[in-house]
Length: 336
Image (cartoon, rainbow, N blue to C red; front, side, top):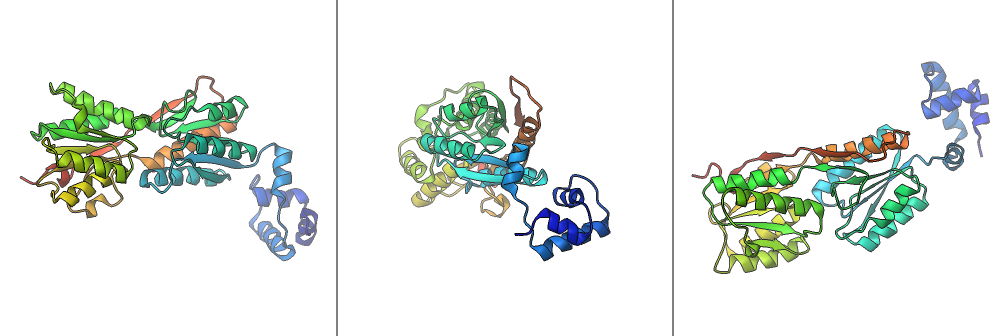
């Protein structure tokens, strides 16, 4: 097996020069760099990353645990994390919790056992955060992603959920709709609870009482939401509009409406927190609260890197980015 000494001899340079070329730790002249890269290719040399990590007490890897990276918003957050990790020379190890606290605990344990240099976790619903706290106490930096408050104290990065949902519902009320439902999903998830709070605040500000019969809770999955929405829409108190707290709940609401034959926005107005990629291609075009999901992931990774590199702050830092609301035709805008 070729060694770094073989590469240095073939290229006619010092071992330290080969190291600088491979690790980018110091500028190397272009011609020298080309000789080193050619020698690496000819010898088939591969650096021993395990030995290197043991010498540096680092693995150059970051662990990330989310409930489901297939969801559009989480997928963008993962891309943001990975983008910043790659720029800094870190490998990202991704695990899914599936909204199962036990699976989250196993994932955190597995990543910690691989000695990741830091950990980013979007806590599962009903997670106690015990394993994540244990990792933090052991000295490994941890950043809570998206679900602020679900993962205890420490560094956290997410968005403001309450104010945008309140703005969305106030907009629906401004259209004159007096009966507005909320497809809230699982209120054990802090983001859903905060969006439910925004819904309630908007109603109270308008002098209306929140009606629990108009709030769809449960797992938040599309299939479960569809059943609850179907029952609501076929009952005696069909709402004029529905605000959906997530993409998943919006799918369930739209499936139920289609099953009954309700047309959006003619028979039922709709607005969604998160929404869908390419929302402008939908018919009707869907009013959406757009999260800066990529930036959330990138910000979480940047904060984690600061901690990994020794920027310690005992009380932790909480960063909330601001979403924006895009009004389209599904809520009734431009249809009169």
